Image 1 (cartoon, rainbow, N blue to C red):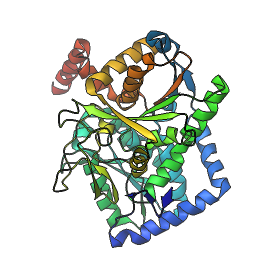
Image 2: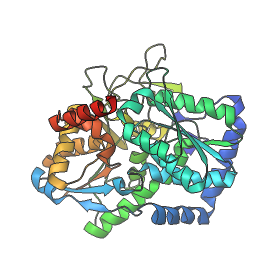
Image 3: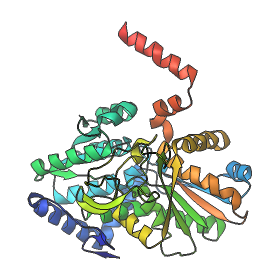
Image 4: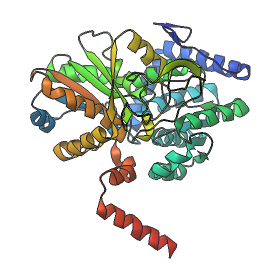
Amino acid sequence: MKDRGYYGEFGGAFIPEILAVTFDELTEKFSAAKKDTGFWQEYVNVMSTYSCRPTPLTFAQNLTEHFGGARIYIKREDLNHTGAHKANNVMGQGLLVKRMGKTRVIAETGAGQHGVATATMAARFGFKCTIYMGEVDVKRQRPNVFWMERLGAEVIPVREGTRILKDAINEAFRDWVTNMDTTHYVLGTACGPHPFPEMVSYFQSIIGEEARRQILETEGRLPKRVYACVGGGSNALGIFSGFLDDNEVELVGVEAGGRGLDTEDHASRLSSDDASIGIAQGYKTWFLQNNDGQMKETHSVAAGLDYVGVSPILSNLSTENRVRFEAATDKEVVNALDITMKKEGLIPALESAHAFARAFMEAPDMSKDDIIVINQSGRGDKDIFTVADAFHDPGWQEFIKEKAKEYHD
């Protein structure tokens, strides 16, 4: 599948010459770690004792009965330490940083979950930590910023460009060029130059390994479909990896439809006609860009899904028709979140709720003998400001006003 970091025509490592030695070292260390059977076991041990692996596979009986179609299971990545699948990748990269003997880590973050996970990993292993976050995301994900700083990380708001995830990535790369001798860039998703797509997918594959084993233990057969939200693609590739060789299992990636694919306010690359193939941020994939190659502004109610690009691995799987890509609008996502909370007592992150939204559209038309699995990649408490605003909650609005008045006084 992969040839020197390429997946079909996508991928590669388009990096400045100054970073070549750093990338060679990272590729060599990662390759050696993969060949070392003890490394994967060390990784699993860390995740089972420090996080919550294996995360459970929950049968959603109430949702199943409500929709009257397929049996709905939910893979509970929200129960990982720090509240999302992000912990899988950062703890794995943390073990690599130890092998490389570096003392500082940097990261970008959009929704803030990767930032919190990286700050947690840095505290656990004793690394200095700097997190780059778009100014827009700093405002809408303030609780995660608070925890990053309390964990000892320096959070730097990025005020250039559109002030969201892609701009945070640019700033992180600038930092790395300056400090590559002591610093490792803990890229948060399966994008960027080789070996990051392969490396992030490798650590996230623990989700798919568990999910496949769990559904076979529970139901004795494989699901008909597996759903996951898609920003960069790490949680999707994580759960999809367990079923890639099972052609009878349909894999469905759900992107941010924002205010609708008939508007420019979305972040759908593989499920719309608005993207084109290009090279940016060190790799080749589908980007939302204009005819001059300038990146477009994107929109999503979920901070973690408004990235302009997508994993080269997913781009190739789309070309091969192995993964079907759909989009869910902000309105559909908020409705899916509402019904999941009220029917199951689960609070998925707004990112994860995109996968729920599409699954809820399709489940009623499926047989009651069919099984679907939805990856709940994160928990929704980080989204309290955005969700309260989306629901126009008067009690919450009054609470914010009172708090603001207290600070002002």
